[in-house]
Image (cartoon, rainbow, N blue to C red; front, side, top):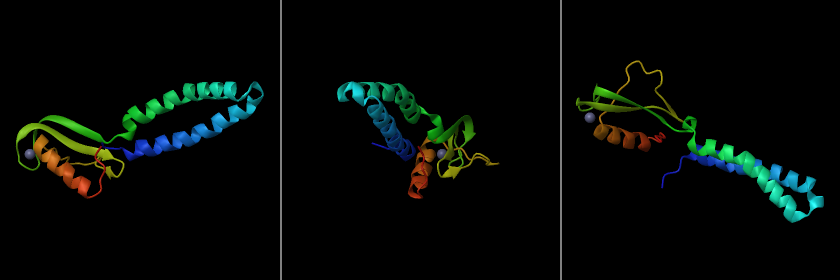
Length: 123
Ligand SMILES: [Zn+2]
């Protein structure tokens, strides 16, 4: 299984953020008893963190951006076909590339493996 470490890091932070909310509600509602306070605290947490979690797991802002273009000449083998290029990832930015290089699916996989070896995040 592959883990996107930006999502994972945010998810760990989000758990830390939930701590003061749940603890605070628990203290405020302590007079209602521990069980009732926990139920209400978890309800409040769920109302907030459903949206936060949804962002963490689905946001494209946290994913690498790939550009797909039809009928390109592959930068490696010259084949005219659908082409792919990595535009941006957490430690890679080719968004201002004047001569973007697209690659066919096969060459793109080789290039991606090469980028991964250099430590570049590709997904
Ligand atoms: Zn190719």
